[in-house]
Length: 153
Image (tube, rainbow, N blue to C red; front, side, top):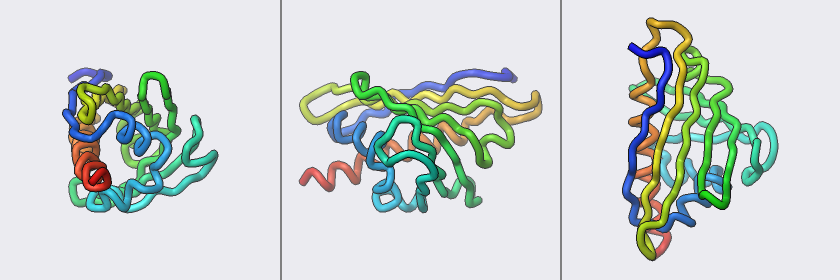
């Protein structure tokens, strides 16, 4: 097994790239209301909700266990890209590096695709590759689409 790598996938979405980007970049405080079955709460530690470099903790349940993901966000408005750089939490117990990237690319007037990638480096050879975190991230993005579509009506 590799000590580091990048997982990538495309998630087709029916909502606009702009609305998805806004939700993930500057409206994180609304995420628990939208996909509360996955994300239970988000706490802002440093910066503002919509500021580059803000530090937040996300509470979630994965594989039946409550967990916390503390991250520093980076945003690129021009490319509609959001990067969540892990700095603490359960994911960092097994990984040295975990960076989740979401890029929203318009495909039609209303639809878009989210290019999801996760860059990671394990702490030890025995640590598992973070496939379950990638699947969880894909589910978060897909489930957010339902919420965004409901709010467009």
